[in-house]
Image 1 (cartoon, rainbow, N blue to C red):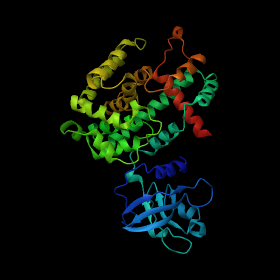
Image 2: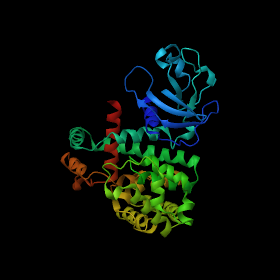
Image 3: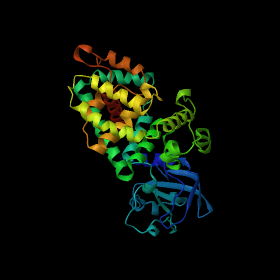
Image 4: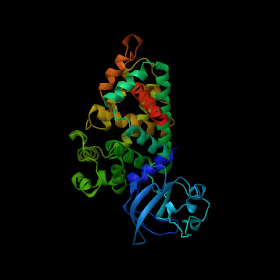
Length: 376
């Protein structure tokens, strides 16, 4: 995994920031994370501003996966790193914190981010890759050219890769969280889209599910208390304040929605036993999800996205279900409709071959585009 993923996590402050401590136990408050230095030389972030045990420090920040990379990269012998006020690492190392020093011999405080991350590194890497897939006209033109050279079987293999990744993420979440907490957090994450995902995670932690189902939640107040919303270019229907209202409405109308979701595991098993070519049982399952669990509070596209991106992987991880065929054939979630034309032009939609516009096609293309982006 590229170190740039770790750098972006720091640049976006995409982690819990209220309990940061150096390896020596000093409290850290980030005033300004610094300017990302995209040049090859020098510290990763310049002109950062931090409070360390209440004392203001200004200087540079260096980001690594492990603390010992400070010496491996010979920063202790490079005067360009004498202004570093903090080394940020993802993992803890075996070296003593005092072993990280500048050229002049003065120690550099270290912060280990792993305990403060919202989710696993692979999910961060995927979110960053997805954020770089613009979906604009030139991107679609490139995708059209690439798709004409891909076989249907290859796209199915790529979709399977994405399914396995999502169930892996779900298992990881369930190893750290209770079922209801995992559902609550992932649901709000998905409602945050790419831009406001981290803020929604913070809200899910600050206001656990019981606050939404047992108390009167004011979405306007919750929205106003959270800083750093990214609203530029946000469609009115996707505004996070609107999504918070919808979630509050769901929890008030159906406070047992996570239990109702769990009950769908039996329905999934029944659908798995049906003829794979018969879509009717799967569509009945989709109705149960949208109407019995979500009570019709969300549009079909958003309900499908919540299902395929989070809730179904959680269900299958919890009950050890291999429901890839259902997930693959599920109706498409939030996805630019213009891409449907791209697939049609590439010969992907062919009713005579029982190829309909479905989640598996979309997921396979997304995975292909992510892998293409990573290779660039």
